[in-house]
Length: 245
Image (tube, rainbow, N blue to C red; front, side):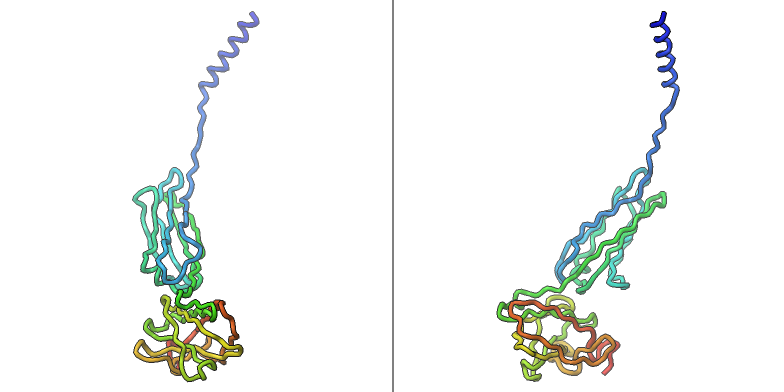
């Protein structure tokens, strides 16, 4: 009798369990962003810069926007709507090769149809590098980053005590606003940078380098540094942009 009672109890428990409904709620998640880009590239080179945006769960992806900025200046932006489970951004080759040396930020914003939003950013450093022709173990490799308003065909020169301030040592153009040269600096060399009006003229004092507020600058100084690389920048040129004569 005791065993029969236990059997009846177990059967009742089984029937009670079958009557209960178990509800499992699947949560909707926001889109994900995957940067397929290096942290730094060389100016003028064609690098693959891609960003992939994917669906989260449940709610489908609807749109995404990618923006590339240099400081507060937008240099590239693109918005795409979703036609599949993901969106792939590929920054055009021409845009990548034209990026000036500097520190950029890639911002991406993605949304799904539940209005869930994901934001992500990645820093991108664009460096100016020297050509092999500018590298000489007996000299100093000088990399010059010129201002954005430098004419594309302008010749860039270094003039100073090593030439008696009479002629310029010309630089080789690497990419947009990026130049290099191999220079033998005697200790105590003083010099300045200047540019030409265009590709048909030579550098002259009309377009000598200026400071951040278009102020006159003293001579730069450099000592002997064979097999070393130094990177220098010109902020403004005389008679160019906002800088007057």
